[in-house]
Length: 296
Image 1 (tube, rainbow, N blue to C red):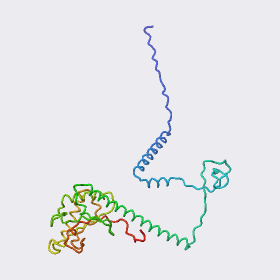
Image 2 (cartoon, rainbow, N blue to C red):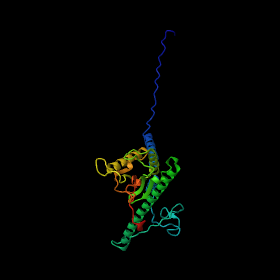
Image 3 (cartoon, one colour):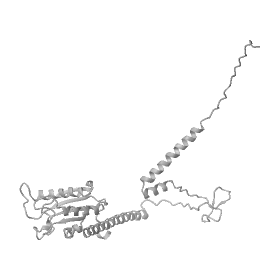
Image 4 (cartoon, helix red, strand yellow):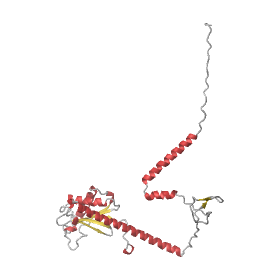
């Protein structure tokens, strides 16, 4: 009928629960984060360690377990090992031998021999280090000589460079000649050709770890008294050389001492006024002590 009211129908939809997921995903995520941290730690170790350190880390984690059980194939050297008593032989096992060594008695002959051997080994080690350093010094001398010979701008300066071994180390001296001087008379300003020469020297020694000593020397001309004597002049020239060496690339932290010796240590002892007594000494100081000849 037209005047009848249509019934109102209300539909109620019950939403089903999704259920409880649990915490398994948290465990998986934690494992993933831990694995990533371990991975980046591995990358960092590979980047910051050298070959020896890598080998040490590998040895630390390498299993070194000795087994005292005999194999089932004819003794400890049979090549097969028993994984479990009563089980079958395993071809993947590595043979191992366990021996028991009782400690030597206190004050025994072996102790004395071992102590002497340790001292000998230490002496041999130091002698080896000294020999390696000596060889490095020889190679440096050759590099400097080659650099002088190959640079036409330094032609004629080979005689101005004197190199020798001293108890302190490798001494490289830039000496004046009658026709070539480092400085103007009475001056501390280094000539351009000499500064170029210093650049070659620094290039040859830049990779060496040795500390450096710089000393200035004068000839006997001039005075060792007064307000500005050979002492002040030699000290100022040594400092001027230090600044020049740093300008051409020397690491300033390697410089251990700078001294002026005036004319107290002449190169030409029988001719104190010889120009060669005016010089700058650059010494690469030894890192290992000089041993007696019988230990070299």
